[in-house]
Length: 360
Image 1 (cartoon, rainbow, N blue to C red):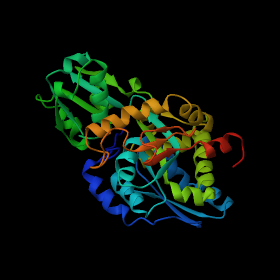
Image 2 (tube, rainbow, N blue to C red; image 1 turned 180 degrees about the vertical axis):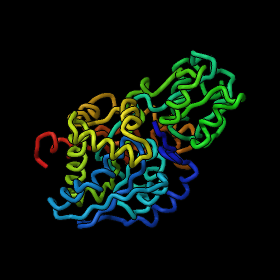
Image 3 (cartoon, one colour; image 1 turned 135 degrees about the horizontal axis):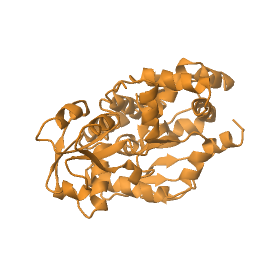
């Protein structure tokens, strides 16, 4: 199985917060009805369907239906895509819920999660060498990409056994160096994501002591759009929703067409069908609109508080943040978590419900 590196992927990027804030002043004060839309996406298991849809006419089909133009642009640098969205150069971007808060929201850009594409369900793993219990991590140096979903996974894992980051020493390590680092005698604890985690866990003495299956729904991979653009251009939202669920229906089948689609997605991401399916197995994909709707009606409010607490504790909600609730988050039912006077991230199921009812 061929693996690939997710360079800089799914990072919170505190270092980019200042850039995001600078970009805010460049963003238009308000959007307006328009015909041309650009959406940024990056290589990741849950986002490969967007690239497939662009390459195979699904994007054009739905754009034509609503008499608009949509371009899905692949960014090799995930953070740059989010920065461009924050600057107003793009109408949408694929991002984690955490990065949506840490970059556009912290930068003052009102954004809406139009769709949650998936959430991590085992892709993010705490690995110990020669030890098989999470409690054994105490006092160890832990190699991970600092301020990434790996860092978040570590914090939540430690919390689950009554510990905190004070009980370990975080060693910032590039995702590209994880496999080589683990092979050295000095590295005894690591947090990383697939496919690196899967490869490391094949080695003798490597133990998965905690993973994101224990954090269901917390690490979300979403389609984030500018809120004003969404309000002014419902056709854009309808088309993007239609694109997603048509592609989901295709790849979730058990026929040759589904196999061909997943093979193409695997190859495009640097692996093969087997490798791509292995990553899908550790990812909770929302194949049907009903899946996303049901998720938002669950404990989404509670999940957001876990995320905002981590972001606040690590200085990722902006310099003005005085509490984890500094940025208000509006849930799909209108409930607001955090400051109702500073709502800068929203969830909506309006268009997913249209899809579920066959009204797109």
